[in-house]
Amino acid sequence: MRDSVRIVMEETGCDEGQAILALESCNYVISKSISKIFDLLKNIVVVKSKFYTFGTHLYGMLTIIVDINHNKHLRTKALVTYNPTTYEIDLSQNWYEYEKKLYTARLISGSIPDISLDIESKVVTEMLDEYKSSFFSAVKEKNIMEVADILEDILREPLKTHAVNFDIILEELNLSQFKKITDKNLPQQMELEFNEYNINVAEPLTIDVICISGNGPSLKAKSLLPGDEILVLINDSRDIAQYLSGLLGGRDVYRPVAIPSKIQEVVKSKNKLLIYVRLAAGVIGKSIVSENEKIRVLYLGRRKMLINRIFLKFYLIFSKFFEIIKR
Image (cartoon, rainbow, N blue to C red; front, side, top):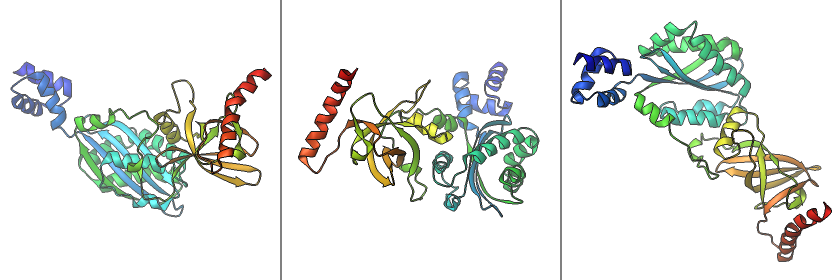
């Protein structure tokens, strides 16, 4: 009996009483008792918060996930933006949904990626150093006012403000609940469903892309129409854009990968064209090109005039042939 209790305590980090409870509920089968501990103990706490600053008119979201049993930091994600709509997001929703909305808000106009990343780094560094004892104590005691005071002390300097107003909710999870979501494999496909990322903002998520030219059948940019399919590379340097690039199949281990995308809209501006392509539901790619730049085309959408459509199809078929002859 004592040996079984000791093994469960060593494997899970629980105390003696918790080990005995798990063993008794699992008929003293050690392997089952260890799994049971992960379901019984709500050691994972997610600090979900949103904030706004006085004077600088900044808004933000913050999630801090910690293991209060071992005083261990698991991860921190932050957003700073000029967009006031962000502050209307509901804190009471599931932590995972809240964190996905944080990622989405990073792509919306008004977000400030440099400050967001700076805050993430500063929160982690100071929370694990100067404020470690007081922060974990406040979280264990569910002292939201103390948690808010600590975060305000940390964020005043990077946000360049004298005061930060916080709304905070603590959500408790057991290890099984946390790992069930964080270990989940996201689908690697073009048509990802981003509907759940909606945070009631009219603007779509817009990512900078580059239209691929040459090395195949091509058309001048001014001849492209909505519905035509082209290849694009995601070249947006924001961390969340690179994250989405991986999900959309736009990146492998070594380099970016061209993504087949249908043109949604072509807008003329002086001698330039703005080409908008649909990367996924609610995710748009934007590229600026010259009117005469040749863009590689994979597929031609429906044209109003049959003759024009036939001509363009023949042009695409034989353009590759002419390229070979020129060589």
